[in-house]
Length: 314
Image (cartoon, rainbow, N blue to C red):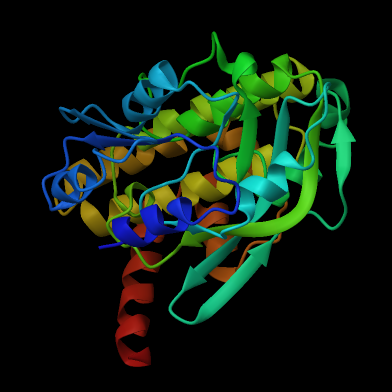
């Protein structure tokens, strides 16, 4: 549905000396046919592979890329025609990554998120200012960034986790980079309409992915230190609370639902972050309180009440 708009935005870049690699990761819709429409164009490469996941697809692109710089674009997003040129203009001999903001869109509504000013930092400075960049969503995704290819020679996305692999990839890149520039641009259009996106789907393994990302973030930022009421703790708490609600919604068998929710509530790492104070909405704060005190039956009643109230709101 979105692929041709995405490709068109890349073809029409004002910076023309680019190689475009399309990796079809076992698509079952019309995407392979759309990709093959471009395979005869000189600067296009089209790869078809069996479905192995987003990490495998991105790694395949990295393995065959010839350019001096690398940019990732997800197939349901699109980019401003000047994005490549704009990001390249910030590179110098010492810079290995240029990171910009995004414009989230759904229908006619757009929500830009970007740095307020251009800043340069070494890995050590990034660790010191980690929370501010993390809260601006500049550290998690590989999109809206330009990487020097030399930086990525020995770096690949992990196939061991299905959520957050891009955050861990970026942490490795940030640690290796000589200099990282965050620039006040938002010319990458991030699609919030696509309800089939992986981030919108319940997967049992996501909880372990959240924990792995949390531990990687903590190690990057401050060694092995755990809970300190910072941005990573808040993110883990938020994600786990959402995950618990997702279990309640998607797992219909009551015994299985209780088992899965209590597994999360009994996690020592989740309990640590659940003790923090965050600026959550009222219903999330109530969910947090019930989880912290391991009140499963009250939690189930709370979710049931929320469901009833949502019917009346409609």
